[in-house]
Image (tube, rainbow, N blue to C red; front, side, top):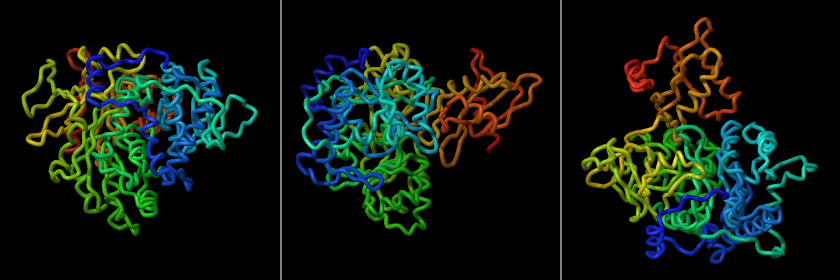
Length: 546
């Protein structure tokens, strides 16, 4: 990437290398290592198509060579907004190999978010499915290309415009070549970005998180063992594989690297997912709490054989105990709580922990080299068992966001700790973390983080809106949903929820961010310092619910 990347302190980096935590392999080398050991074993299945470990390695090499021919070079970047399919994995590894990191982007994001993302990253290309979930992604990509000169190529699956030479056929790009390429492409260095994830954007548009080769490689090497993933495992990805939880915890990349098999699904609906579990003999899956609850409910009267399922990882948000305690009985699998962040730190309950630890805590750090602090508002450590903000640094936690000095100054301490914004306490005596909430103003809808400030800004553009506030209100299935509080302009009729949702959707806001309840009020409560008293709003919701 063109901008300087934030680096871990040189002394800590030297320690990670000398202690063997950081190795000498790139991410693509670790993920594709099984191609040398068991090349004919199936690595990846999606939509009735499969690739063996050997064929996957060949496809990645071919795609890397073709990308180089198209002018993609080390230091470039490409936005990759693809659904779960073979080409998502091939393209991600090929770009990572040549040092042109893929910026992995959820398919739910629209023009509003992507325009800001392109301004930050200045990618040379955008990879999309032509259409997905009844949305024209190719048309959106063309709008972005017209607005941003850096975008030279559109890499598209199912494109039907052969006359546009800037549109590259993704399927053909990822086809294995019959023979070796004419020349070997330049490869990434170990301190390059392997790929980029997106933050939840708690104060606006998503921030870009460069995961460096050595650090992310370490994560992919240690997480399979924590989840009991090996060459006999079958991992089902039904949530988007562009999400860090599904991608590498151990997820898609970690499972392939361990020699196992990944099944990419397009629907998390229990009826569809259960059929895949039965047919593919799935052993592992990762779910957000709301999905875990739905699966447990649906499993009580399913006709599908789920006996192969061994581990269900639950993460993305803190689940309630009822959301997870039914899983062992209903699905026949061990629950593993996974609490982490796209910026790095991962915590897991152990597969052999007691039920109380598994159901009520969010686990312990994945690496003995992870450093955590729990601090109060004054920045000092809280007493044992006290609640405070979690700070962390370690061998796979980033040192900063890409090209965002303001965010880095706010989110990282001078000695390299990342301020997670999560309120936690350390459970005694297990030393597991328990997540108690957020320091920052964000709604966590079933694992999707929705920044209040962004939504308030857009809703405030409605001609009838004088003042607006966003809070999360409790919801049995999703944990929280978005509630919009509006003070209307004098003399104008109050909009209803449908009108407000339509207004926001027209501005390109992702669908999962749209409000699900609306309250029209005469005035908003304010604190003495001029900020809306959201604690008071939440208390009024609790009082009404009670």
